[in-house]
Length: 464
Image (cartoon, rainbow, N blue to C red; front, side, top):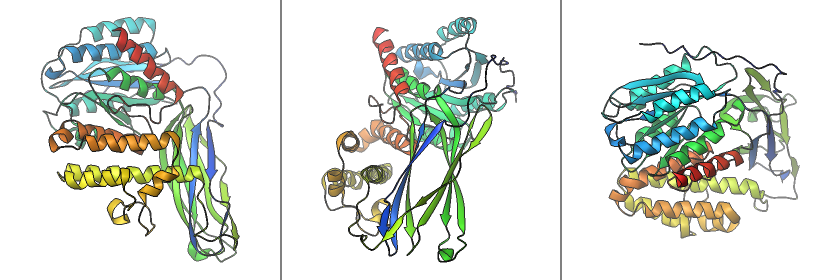
């Protein structure tokens, strides 16, 4: 096997080293006064990327050039890659891999300078489509390029893989992706959302986007806007939960756990909602810290202790959840409804899937834990009451997503033709808390730079 370790060397510019601390802000939201007796509390952690210098990017574009990409699709792919090159700067590096029946590296990782742009542009404009669809070969080559880099310290590495059809060779779902971020893009109605979502899910922080014809550059642009604004790599949450068996002792024992949250972009938010059981009398309910990397260095925050005041003035029945905590809780509950409905549709049980979505939109009767999973509460989830507790854009977005998913489950044919890709992309977006193209609706979770890139690409498509 060829070893791709010929990435272009990097000469670091003179100047002060970037500041590593202060790139992430953590906000903690929870009720400060809680009942004296045993109860359950929700705690919301929100991590936000602060304005600061970004990490340089190594991006590998893995492009489907099978026979189905001929004509308009190929021209759209060429315009998209020219847009990507235009947004990269001389500190970024680009490699392009094409695949049909086999994979081919168009160029190694090259710094995007005026000279390399002209040379790569010639290669892009000479692309032609033929043969089968060996997605596995393209993915493996892209991974080899990133994994064998000689220069990778402090650099964001990611793969953007697109395909417009079904695999005809082997199975890319069997590839061990490891810690590489892979964003996948399904293009048109003949794509394979099952494979593309699986690839993204197996990666670290990847997303799957469903893109209709005419929207390829929009999906790439929004994703690229995030990759070109990373201020903290491999953000990791460290939680210390109290050992309930030692809660009444002077020396409290804390049980640590870690959760990887991926890379964080400028003004991007990553939310973590926790449900914590509070034994009687416990006041220090959580210890929270986090780590991230930037410029090859690791930053570790000081631990924060989340404390509450126990009081007999408030009972569990009387206590109100904070609005922003409730909003995130409701989003996750509605997403669980979408997920179980999608599982039903994949099992060709559209009647059950549609019933869940209709109840999610209109019914006040609610869902049991057995139906949607998630919360440890034994009470049914009164969806009608949930909608009443939401206001503004979030309420509109979630209801619109349920309604569109319901429409795309009108028949098994429609679901398999368009609905599955839409559902998978929608769930991928909610899971990663990142924008993932869903046909024409791609703004959810977008940062200002992602949205700016999206608008620029839309202008590019209009002019072309």
